[in-house]
Amino acid sequence: MSKVLLGHVYLAKNPKCGGVVAMNWKEKGRKKEEAKTVRNWLKRGFTVELLGRYEGDPEPKICMRNLNSPCACQEADRG
Image (cartoon, rainbow, N blue to C red; front, side):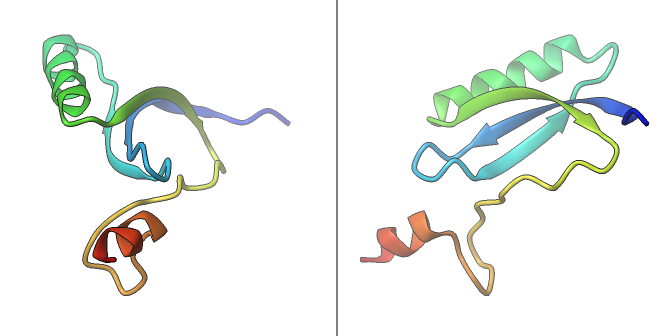
């Protein structure tokens, strides 16, 4: 039984921990907007990856502030 491809997604990752800080689904007709988004992420120092997402794939590791359990890289920033 093969998995169903849901589409492709750009992931912006925190270089400290590899956690995802933003994502954007790749869609037809949005090439310029997607390029601008990726360019902005790169300017901010994030690593950008394009992944195929399949039905049943696990969710990526999220790195976000203001959660009950922040990412380890943010805990280190608090010093």
